[in-house]
Amino acid sequence: MSNFVIKKLTEAGAYLEGHFLLSSGRHSNRYCQCAKLFENPETAADVIVTLAEQLKNVEFDLIVGPAMGGVIAAYELSRQTGKSNIFVERENNIMCLRRGFSIKPGARVIIMEDVVTTGKSTKETAEVIKSLGGVVVGVACIVDRGVKDLGFPLYSATRINAESYDAAECPLCAEGKMEAVKPGSRKF
Image (cartoon, rainbow, N blue to C red; front, side):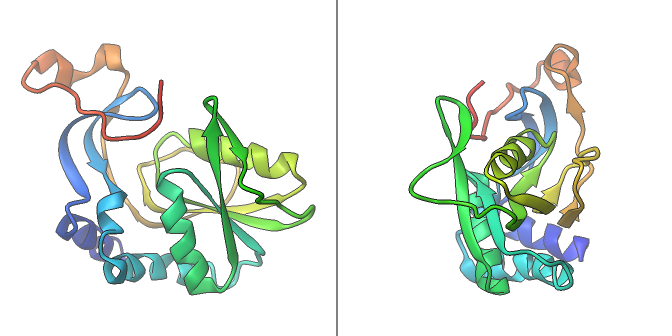
C-alpha cells in the first residue's frame, strides 16, 4: 500500500524533496503537497480508497476536514464511504466551525487530514468537535510524517520518513545551499 501511494504522490508532483519550512515552524527535507494529488480526481480516489478500506469496520457518522488540506480529502473519503463531511477553518487564526455546519452531540467523527506532521491542526480540530459534543473515533490521513500519539487511532495511506528540525538547529540552513520554501497555508 505504502509504495503504491508514494508512487501516486510522486507521479502527481506531490512528493517533494528539498528544504521546506513546515506549518509547525520546523524545517524538513521532504514535503507532500497533496493539493497536487487532487488535480486528478481518479488518482486521488485511488489513494483515498486505501483509507476507506481501513475504515470499513469503524463506526462513524461524520468526517471533518481541517481547512485547507483536509477539505478535498474529507470530501473524497465522504464520497467513498457514504458519510457526510464538513470542514473546520481558521478565523483570527483559531480553528472553528462556520458556514452553518453543525455537529450533533454524540456524533462519532473521523478527522480527515492530507498530511499529519506534529498533529497541531488535528488536535485543534478535535477540540472543536469535542466542544460541540462530538466524539472523535479516529484520524485518517494520506501521509503520516511520523506523528507521535494523537490520542486517537491513526489510519494512513502511507508513512514517510522525513527529517524534521527545529529551525535553529536545521542542518539544511547550516549548509546554506538553498533557502527554505514555505508551501503550507498556516500563518505563524
